[in-house]
Length: 157
Figure 1 (cartoon, helix red, strand yellow):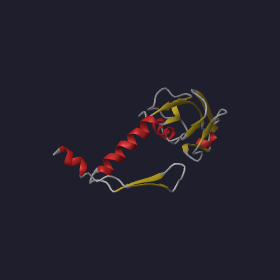
Figure 2 (tube, rainbow, N blue to C red):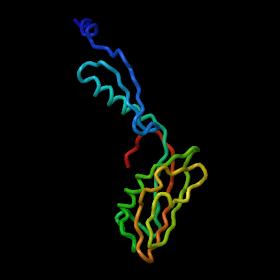
Figure 3 (cartoon, rainbow, N blue to C red):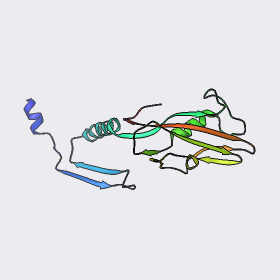
């Protein structure tokens, strides 16, 4: 009886890979036909394996001059520190070498502070320089120091 389960199982006959809207970041993999419910199971397994095995770089710490804790506010800065940290978590970083490495941004207001304002060292590239980190009002000043490190897998903050 168990042998019959495996003999009558629908097995994929075609495997097709198509580039997505952003070819370097997205693709569609089509395996057909599959038994009902197998697509979701295979897709989740593939996603988990990819997330747990990819190497990458990210901002792992932030130090803001004059700030003692994440619930502080900075005079002349529209966002509070919690919002700034959430914005920093969205910075996409590419680093060729090993970490940790430091990056710094220092700006005076009135101004818009973006990821592109960050002074990077040699092999660090910010992939989304248009990302807004915070807004500075007249007379406001901010200095932030970031640590960038490499790692494997997804690590929740």
